[in-house]
Amino acid sequence: MTRRARRRSDRHQGGHGQRGGGLAGWLLPDAVVRLRDGEWTVRPLSGAAAVKVYRCPGCDHEINPGTPHLVVWPPDEVADRRHWHRPCWERRCRAARLPPYAD
Image (cartoon, rainbow, N blue to C red; front, top):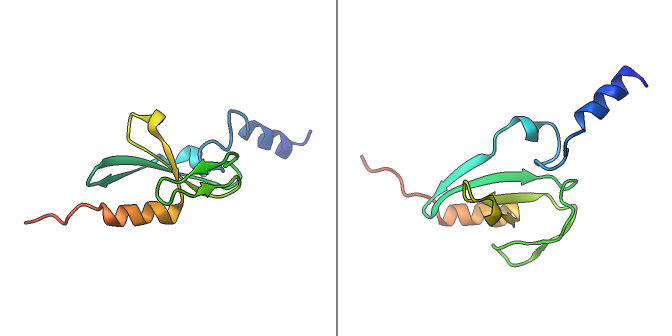
């Protein structure tokens, strides 16, 4: 086995693809978004890592396998995570954004 092939196989051990696909998902922390209804942890999921059919709560349509999308949940409540289309989540964020700070 060549050195390059060995390095690649070592890198892929341990559940690769569960954090948005690619090495960057393992190195970057999940984003936390503050909205009127609280804080939300947001994790992008690549199309390669999306292997099931999910239903987007924003539009009530299916998210098919192979479709990149977002996984969103309240911090410390991973069991409440939901899978959103990116445009649906962005529309929700615009509607629920916090008002500007008053000086």
